[in-house]
Image 1 (cartoon, rainbow over the protein chains, first blue to last red):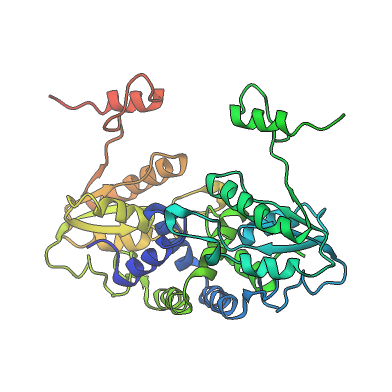
Image 2 (image 1 turned 30 degrees about the horizontal axis):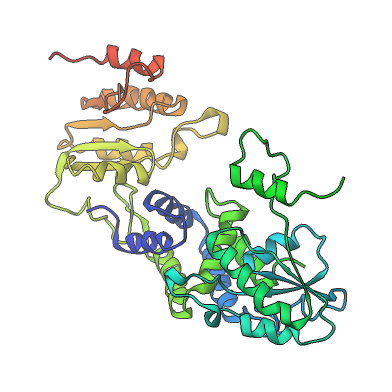
Length: 198
Length: 198
C-alpha cells in the first residue's frame, strides 16, 4: 500500500498540469488536504467557472469572458495597429509593458510542417480579413525567433504585403542587462543587423 | 487590462499551491483552459471528493479514506514495531522502500518552541497510549535531523523510555552515492559516530 485511493487520484490529476512531476503533485495534494473544505470548493468552482465563461474573442482570438474581448471593444485602443502574436500568453506579456495601445491578433499557434501545422490551422484567414479594413495601417509581428516563428513571420509578411499595409517585426538583439560576452552569436548577429542610428 | 476576470481568479487559485509563482500559475491556467470541460469537471470533482473522503486515521494519524487506515487494519503488518514520523509524506517515503513491515505513528508536526509548538500540539499523547500495549516492542524514530527534529527525538526518547520499550533512531550518515569530499562536516561526524562493525 502507498497512497490511499482518493489521494492517488488527486496526485494523478495534479500531475496532468504542465511542469508538475510526482513530487510536486504530492506536495500540492497534501497542501490541498490541509486547506479548509470551503477553500477547496472555491478552487474547484473557479476552475469550472473559468472554463465555462472564457472563450476566444471572435475578432482577435484572445481568451476572454467577453466577446469581443476587453481590448477589441475598448475605445481607448488605437485601431490602426494590429500586433500579431502566436499565443494568448504572448499578448499578456506585451500588455504587461503597458506601452502598446493597438489591437492584437492571436494566431493560436505557429506554422510547423514537422507537426503538420499549416496556415489553415491558424487564425491567418481571420487576420487577412481584418487587414482588409482600410483603418488598419500597420501590422506588427511579435513572434518568437524560433524556426517555426521565422517560417510564420516570413509567410505572413509575404501574404500581407499585397494589402498595402505596413508590416513590421519586433527587434531582436541584446536583452537589457545582457552581456556581449555571454550572449550567443546569432543574437549578436541580429543585434548588429538591426542597429539603429544613435 | 491584462487578464480577463475569471482568468485572473483562476491564476490566483493556482498561486495558492505550494511552490507556484505567477508564471507557473499562468501556465497552469492556460493549460486548464485548453483541457476539455469534462476533464476540468473531473479534476474539480476529485479535489472535492478527496477532501471529503480523506481523513486522519484514529490510530496512527496517517491520511486515509479508511478508519483505521489501510496499514493499521492490515493483518500483514508487524504490530510490534511502530515507526514515528513527523508528516504523512514521510510515511509515504518509507512505504516506497517496500521494506518496512511495521506500523506507523504520524506526529503531525515537530516540537518547535520558536513557533510555539509543544508536545501537546502533536500526537504525542496518542503515541504514549499506543505504547502501553504490551505487544509493542520497538519504537523507531524516523525524524529528520533538523533542530526541531532533534528536539522532538530527544523528547520522545525521554518520555518513551519509562515504558520499557526499545527506542531506536534511523541512521544518519553518508547518503548512497554520496561523496566524502562534498558532504558537509556534520554528516561526516554523524557517519563516524554511527559506524557499525564490518
